[in-house]
Image (tube, rainbow, N blue to C red; front, side):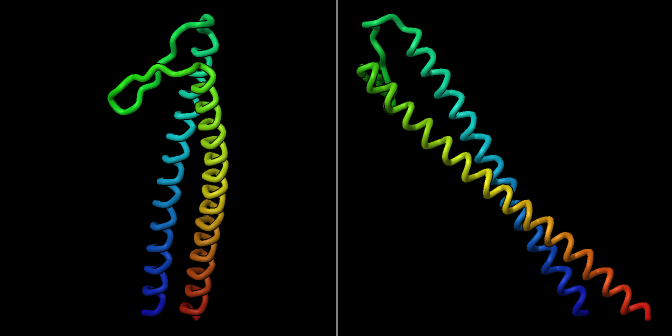
Length: 119
């Protein structure tokens, strides 16, 4: 009976960790897409002729802004997002390691139970 309870705890923990990993991976992918969009926009801004008007969407309103100000804001956002992606990758690695350890522990515990239960 204790084996069933322990197995259920392992299974619940494994399910929780797997869901955390899935959510973290999805968030990382979303931020990576955002970084690519920022890079694309920065390229478009660079390609504009000098003196060309640049607008930024703020809520439902487009506001004319200085080209260098927008570039600086986008580069800061890109840097921040890139650091966040690295943090998410580290979190994914930690969760994956924890999941793998839990799976190994479950297998070892199951093997030990079978060995003692069949004696």
